[in-house]
Length: 117
Ligand SMILES: [Zn+2]
Image 1 (cartoon, rainbow, N blue to C red):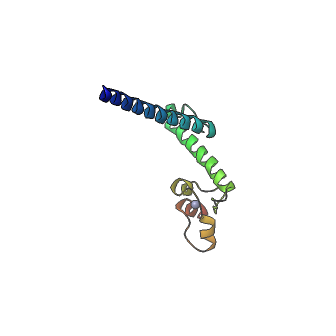
Image 2 (spheres, helix red, strand yellow):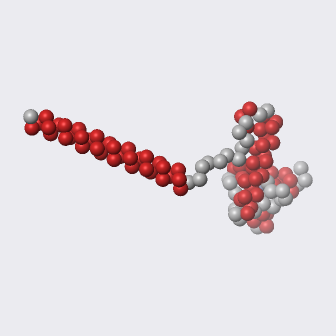
């Protein structure tokens, strides 16, 4: 009898701990969803249904948007205007202006545009 009671209480303990753990997860999740803003995508909702040509135009426009944000944050110092896109795609930042001024290498896009190509 005593053993059966012990097993029951152990089961209750496990249930209790599971409940506490699950509650913690739920509270953590709710707390997280309250404190962090919902993810909003800049890409249009029907992006995947677009033609490749329209996808390309939207991607380029999104890159330009991101580049202007990087410029505002000071991590994009390009040597051409409008700034190159390849540095953002490959590195997330651009140092082509510094490179050009110090006689270093600029990216391929900047090199072509500086050469008038
Ligand atoms: Zn560049």
